[in-house]
Length: 194
Image (cartoon, rainbow, N blue to C red; front, top):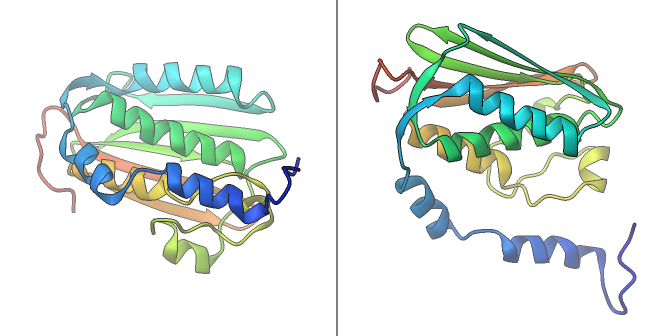
């Protein structure tokens, strides 16, 4: 519903969001101050997805598939939780008709691989090139009516890379999107993912 305050312009909402967003220095400090410890990925993801399904996405079925179930990483669990939560938010937001959201966890070459897949509107090739840029929002009908400042995926990338990980997106318009991120397992250590 549009804001009806006198003198309020629709662009004011976006300006308010940008002002409330953390500065570059704050984002860098956040990433540099990670509290890494042994963390069990499936347990944290299960808790987040259950909360998400209960509070934010009653029209979506959210499923988890972790193999093996015990994927242990050396990470700041709170920050990785923010990544998963942001990706779940996007999966729900960009599949407004409901549908299935899948969260898969695997071990691939001594790295934990998490993939969140939706059945939403997908992402154009043009938007794919810029999707991790700070303040970038895709040019689609859902973006035009949903809130956001274009910081979520940029922050996700910063957090994943601060953990010596990698994040990427695969998408097909009108079919859906998969966002994956890979992190070193607890046994692997902090080597850079190629």
